[in-house]
Image 1 (tube, rainbow, N blue to C red):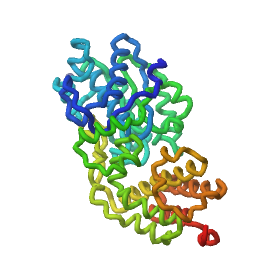
Image 2: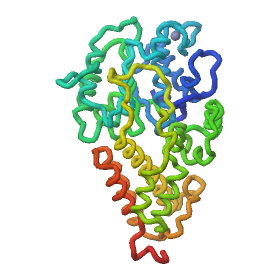
Image 3: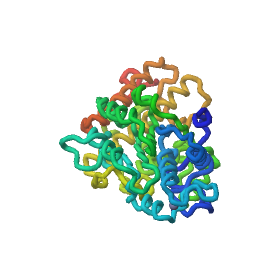
Image 4: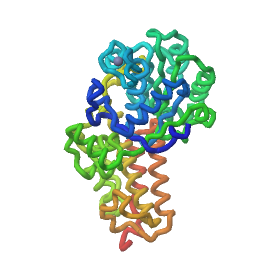
Length: 397
Ligand SMILES: [Zn+2]
């Protein structure tokens, strides 16, 4: 299975070059490397060598989940395999049911799309408070259309943080092989999975996009993205969209000004939460289609959840900025760093690593607090205070 583990693939979350052989909506089409990776899996399926449980891994936003969906559609498509092509036709009844979110043999568990912070145990196995279908129930049903039954579990790392019971419940189900059932788990943080879960999964690795593929993605999208966004996103279309939606251009000066002490930390934190994000209500560039886990669609975001989103985005970008500073401090080739253009005159470049570690720790702590429902304003203010230079080093640092 070593060919699956080579990090050569890439895909798109939202759209890619049109592929004339497929009548899929534009946003369902995959870029060359991702398509090749998925076609490789279909060939394994045709030769009877497809492992029953896969783990699509790679950086966030490079299109792993979109590739998983197209892969699943190819498995249930009525035309798949005809003329040696396993690419879904996009027009048969099964494909239409996938595209319209109605396919009975496809179960999608996507906590974020369901408006949940983490994967809930009641989505895996039935409990007293279960209101929708569960993974366990789906597995117990016969295939409705006589082809594959496919489980797609997105961001499976959302099952950690004190939720060991979720991973253990998954493990129990994974341990019972069922003919005709395929698991595809997706994660950009597979290290957060239990070893016992990870060992049951065959990794399929997706990489960041090359500059050429990223450009092709932008062209296919008809997007007029700021070239800086492409650079800051480091080959991840999903991250580029996030950066645009979180107002990265406005956020970066607030991060830099806090780090170098030219802005008051608390005022900067409040400015972060007050950034006017006109585009924030747009979706994450996701395609329509494929059934969610049976729960209602995500509710409109409340003021509190918007503040949480903003705080999370700001913390993530600040982590990327400080990480660049750390790497720059460590002598990494500056050409590989994307935030070194910020003017951080007061950052003590020659300071010992503890200076950076303190700030990274504070950002990670705040990010963790957000996941545990700490008030986002408080979490962000604490992190921003930790970013600011100490009084002693503020002058002439
Ligand atoms: Zn089809």
